[in-house]
Amino acid sequence: MVPLSYYLVLSGILFACGVTGFLIKRNIITIFMSIELMLNGVNLSFVAFAANWHALSGQVFVFFVMVVAAAEAAVGLAIIIAVYRTRETLNVDQVNLLKL
Amino acid sequence: MLHLTIFLIFGAICVAGAVNLLVQRHPINSALSLIVVMASLAVEYLLLGAEFVAAVQVIIYAGAIMVLFVFVIMLLNAGEEERTKGSRVAMIFGIPGMLVGSGLVAWVLLEHSGTHSVAAGALPGPPKTIAWLLFHEFLLPFEVTSVLVLIAIMGAVVLAGHPDSGGPAKKEG
Image (cartoon, chains in turn cyan, red):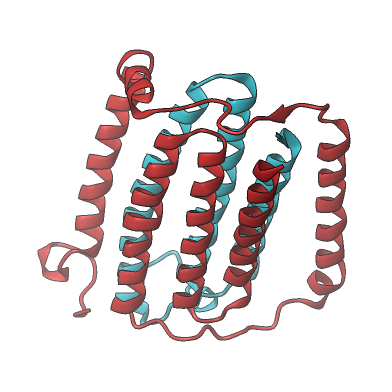
């Protein structure tokens, strides 16, 4: 028997690591990976709450979050490739114009 | 007791992978530690009984999405990131503030969340049940996600496709 709060604390730690990486990392791919880490933390709390309240819809929502994450990864990585083609850098400090 | 031990072991692996993602400077190392995080999260899902979610986590997240990341890292030949100097205020106030805030949230969660505990395999989520839910209660969202994935595929092809095929980029990748 694991208390529900342990799962929530673990998911909070993962989310906080994701936010920290998003803020301190300078490589655009690593920033993107931090976003995936945040989504994973949220997924864990979805599943934990689903088990706590015996509501299977929580697990279905995790499925939807994964689909959105997959779509986001495909489009985001394509944008990263497009940015790299014109700027030839992955450092976000040098990508400071909205223009491609 | 065994349940708690497995939870703690894989939770520790999970947190270690997440911290390693932040510490490593080469993106490929960060990607591999993210795979470790996702694989140990799949074990946590199994502990909660969510078999389908655990399988999908390994197949889609640790498989498909991370392969995409690793391909892009290799394609763009990403090297070690250069550290830029952040502001000193962020170092002085940000890190202690973050520690205090997360400690506070953890304390509130641990103290005030009651005595709910989740048994091992508390809510089994076999593919059959999930599929029934997806095709009955969640039929409309499910169909909308298929449209979303289609749009994402087309967007990825247009954005990353060959520059001559109408993209804004002029230079050859």
